[in-house]
Length: 484
Image (cartoon, rainbow, N blue to C red):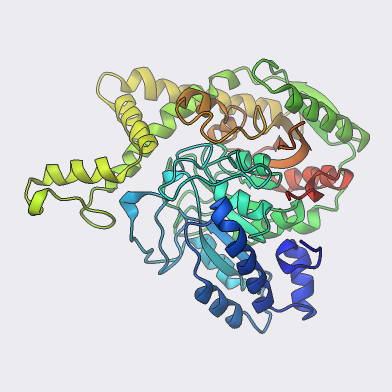
C-alpha cells in the first residue's frame, strides 16, 4: 500500500488531511472498504461488513467537526452500538441488536467518529487466540498460519492490516495487550474505572476494561482522551480528572525509573527475552534508570485469575437462557419443560470454551468449595495488588514482556487449555491489580513475528505510560514495520 493511501494513515495523520480537505471521509471509507473486500476473506477480522451504512456515516461526517470527525474507528463485537448486531461472536446471541449505545460509543459519536462495528473476537472474550468464535478464527496479518492473539484479535489484526484506522477492544486478562503484541501494534488497558464499562457485554465485571488498539502511541493517547472519564451510568467509573494525554507525550523521560522484576526465563521464548533486554538498553540510552523490584505473588496470578474470572463469568452468563433475547432452542414441536429449553439453548448456544468457563466458575462458587477456591483467590488478588503498590512506590513504571512468545500457530494450543491460559501469564496481573498497562512493539522473531513489551504504572497514571512508550517508540523503528 502506498504511504498516501488513507487506510494506511494514523488518526493524527488522517485528521490533518481531513482538516485541510486533502481527503474526504467518503474517500477514507471507500479505501477501507476496498481493502476489506480484498483482505477480510483471508483474515476474517470482521464478522460482517455493511458498506452502505459506512458510506452513509461518511457522508454525514462533513463538515469536519470534533476531534475524530471523519475518522473510522473499528469496534469489537461485545461493545453495544444502538441498532447494530452485538453477538459477542456467540450463537446464543444470534440476531441480537443492541438497544442503546455504550458510553464509549456515545463519546466517539460526539467527536464525529465513523463507527465500523463487529470486529471478530473469542466468544464472550473467552480466549487468547480468536479461535473460539462462531464466525471462525481470525488470522494474523504477519503470518496467516498464526493466531492474532485474543480475545480482541479481530480489532488488532484489522489495525495491523490497515483495514482499520484504530480500534476499540476489551481487556479482562490481556485481551488488548496480547493481540497488540502478536500483531505489532500498540494496545492499552486503562486503569479499572478510567473508562466506562456501560454497554460492554460483561465477562468478569471486576476485571473488564475497554481500551484502544492503534498504529502508534500518539493515536493511543488521542483515542483514550476521547473515551476516558467518569460516567454516571457506571458506578465503577472513577471521578478522576482526565489529563491531556497527547500534550503529555512530549514531556522528557530522563530520570524515569524503570522497574525490572526478577523473572525466571524458563518458559520465555529466548527471542522475546533478547528483545526485552534490547529494549532496556534503549531506555537506559534515553536517560531512564533501572530499579530492581519484586513481585513475589505474580507466579500465582494465572491460577488466581481463572478462579475469579470464571466465577464472575458464570454469574454473568446466567442471563443467557433463551427467554428474553438471543437464541432459543425448544424441544421437538415446541414440547418440553422450561428446564428443557434452558438446557437445549445453553448447550447449543455456548461454545466449548464458554461451557468450560461456566462449569469452572460454578464449581468454585459452589457450596463447600467457595472458601477453598474463590475466597482464597480473592485474598491472593489482594496480595498481588499489594506487590504492585510496593513496586510502583520504588519506580515509575514496571517493564515486563507482553507475552512469553511471539504468535503461535492456529490450532497449536486450542486443545490444550492450560497452555492457552499460560499465554496470558504476564498480562493477567495488571487486571487483578487494577493498574494501567501498555503494550508497544519491540522487535521481531527470526520468523518475522512481532514481539511486544509491556509497561505498567500506578492507577490513573496512563499519562506516564504513554510518555514512556512514546519515547521508546520514537527511538526505534518497530512501529513503522508493516505486514505484506
